[in-house]
Length: 188
Image (cartoon, one colour):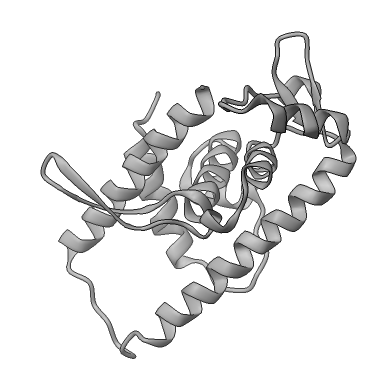
């Protein structure tokens, strides 16, 4: 039975909230706790992580939305964004290569010349070993920035906070919209 993305994200968020912090879990453990297939869990966990790191923070009201804050990736140049996109998409081999949509093809050519990416006969791209190392450093830059921002936010919260169910639903809807947007970007 195919579930809609909102229900999958809701299940994952609820389950993640029940887990202990600073402990490693496997996708299989999460799969067992959620009754979702482990491949679905893995796909959505990478999607959630990608969204958390790269998508702008938005607010939705009715049929309108507002960008509240752009992600830390605004400090990344296009080259870094392309490498991060390949990394988050797990484009590490020819069979996992993805398309890159860029207006200035010279950056892609530079990445090919520097042997940071490879292309396939279908004009899709994946990271080389050197590209993976550089993309991982970019990933660390993004996650470190996000972690610092999270700590600032967390330290400013009152000790006991209770969010009304409507706020939680808005957050889930917001995340679902981000996932749909990201799925469209990945398909391009």
